[in-house]
Image (cartoon, rainbow, N blue to C red; front, side, top):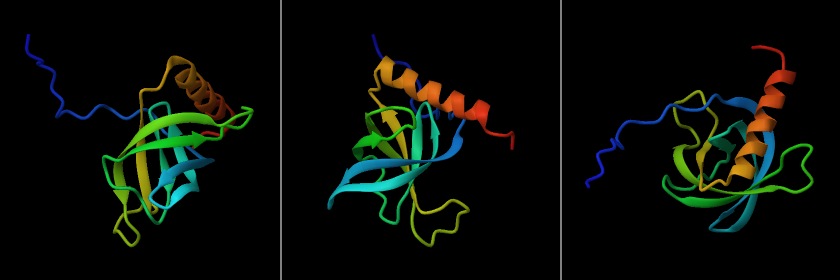
Length: 122
């Protein structure tokens, strides 16, 4: 049976939470530590002057407050903003989580929802 799913239609983005989190990931020069500036259950945006190419698979170590160890995730770069690009967003890269097990996804969702409830409305 042929696959009839339409992969050209982008999936709706999960609601983003603006919050800085330390994140480490491997680049060509080794492990780099930067800050993710927004997070959702489906991914995050990392501020960096040297974004990885779109499509790059990357191992992420995300430090969530209240969790004793960083969450080890795999992601794929889906979008980049270069330094000096004419956009309102800072230079960096959007990373979508891939192959996230239920335990990690639940921890991320709980963290996002807890922060959302603690922060004042925009």
